[in-house]
Amino acid sequence: MKKILSVFFVMIFALSFVTAAVAQSSEITLDETVFITLEKDDEASFSFTAQETAVYRLSFVLKNKSYTECKIYSPKSTDYKNAGALWMYYSDEDENSVTPSTYVCINKGTKISVVLTEASGKHSYETDMYDLTDTAELEMTLAKSKLGPMELGKIYRTTSFYAGHYFIPEKSGYYNIRSFSTSTEYDPSIRIFDENGLLIQDDDMGYNGDLNYDTTVYFTAGSVYFINPRVSVYDEENDEYDYSPDLPIDYTYSLTDASEMKVESYQLGSDNIVMTSKNYYVNPVYIIPGGAASSINAEDVSVVSSKPRVADVHSIEVKDGAVCISIYAKKAGSAVFTVEFPDGENMEFNVKVRSKIIVFFENLFNTIKGKIKGLFKK
Image (cartoon, rainbow, N blue to C red; front, side, top):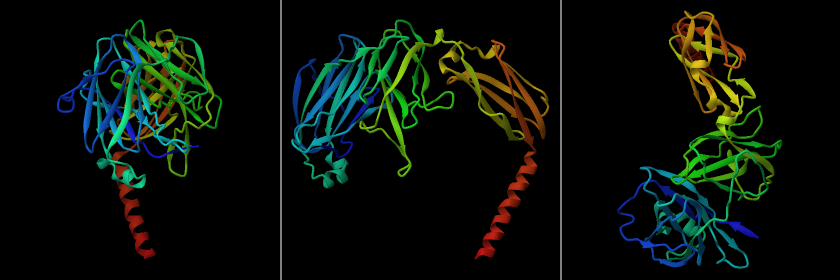
């Protein structure tokens, strides 16, 4: 049985060259295993230039109980993005059988740098708890991944936490990925990586009130993307999501060119809105599936207020799979907003506006009332 010790190996995509960190670099040869020894706080750096646009797998075998950080640098941006965390597993039978790995998207001609740092001093808690050494010994291998390509419109089924595909679009544009699960035991989630690291993490934007994801992302023609479907379960006791590989997983999902998607239905964010005068509020109308929103122009959506002197439309914007209607409240009163889409579908929502001055004095009164009650309790 394996036991998780900690997140010892953190892979981070750095989106710009850091000259101080990569002053000296050895070239990595594809499929070659490199043995590395790092004394306390030592650093080693390596570089690789892709001859082919692909998803590559960077893997390690740790030869002792040590703490090493790995950062991957790419010259495409000026910020860092988390490329995922690698959990360290020590087998009861053989404590040296540790093989953390991560997938790296690299476009042809792009040069990456891999920087390894002995980091026991930065993580003294784990070092003391697990009796780790301050000398790291490990093997590193970079190889082209064995991931299969993802085809548009095909329905895939996943039963593994480590499932994944690569996708190289033939044309630039918006693409939609959505899951089809009826389970109430777990929440399907998705991660998408590009050559700069994490593009979308664990998108849980559901539709039709269930736990499925339905997300739309812009892909550039000829670039490679790593698509990683998985699941999570909410841990109420610790108030966090559990992404353990041991969780049950069995659902289907599909990737579609968003320009070819049709609207199935609309879901209004709120039917009744209460506002304070001189304030703004955004009421979204969710497009199902979200990818179909890319075919809707904000100029073609009609939103009319029954009493524009009370509250009126400030702006209409299509983003994140929804038509976002910004409302400006002018004075106390009520108004009904009518929304009409190009396909003839229409809906209504109510807006009640309260006077800013009245709301101020109500809040002041409630504050004083609360303090008086507090004095009597003492």
